[in-house]
Image (tube, rainbow, N blue to C red; front, side, top):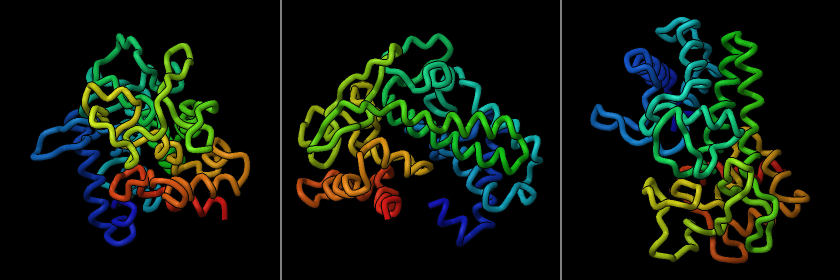
Length: 274
């Protein structure tokens, strides 16, 4: 929605970004998942960071109602500081920085939040980092740019190269603090999963490491590093195309959820292999 809005209605997009930054100046954090004027539960990463970064990369910052210093201060805070409670805003940055991923069953003494969706939160955090890296470059902060560009590759730390499913190998999995992966069937929480006792959303009972999506689906999801995804999930471009075809239901039951956010960009993965 926001990338399209940036092309069709840049003035409206600017107003939204100004409201995000204004909300952060009032509450300390960029608003997430607000409805009826109150905060809701954050689904994964800090989506507001990506929205703000998208605007700055395309239109700069001079048209916004805030100074470069104010914008940089907020982006920097959101990149390095964990809020006391991160269910409604911010990210679980402390453990993410320490381990290079959001660990499963971590004992976090710094903050509180719903300790689920470890793999998908890592992927989303990394994508947020990439947006901040680009915005920081536009804003002239070389250190923040370099730090976030490097950290945006943390998504790779969720890939277990030994996991196999439907004839393919290499899938995102949740991971313990000691680096050990915890196995989840990559098809769990996909359209091919008919189990009635699988919790796949924000429920505390969701033990699969992903949010409203399967590990198979999230294993294609790093919009900022399509070539990296190809290398992590296949040994050749031909194999990657076969894996995509299988995911979209060419040979077996489709794992693609056309109405689900992680799936929106997946058809573009064909682009990365020509």
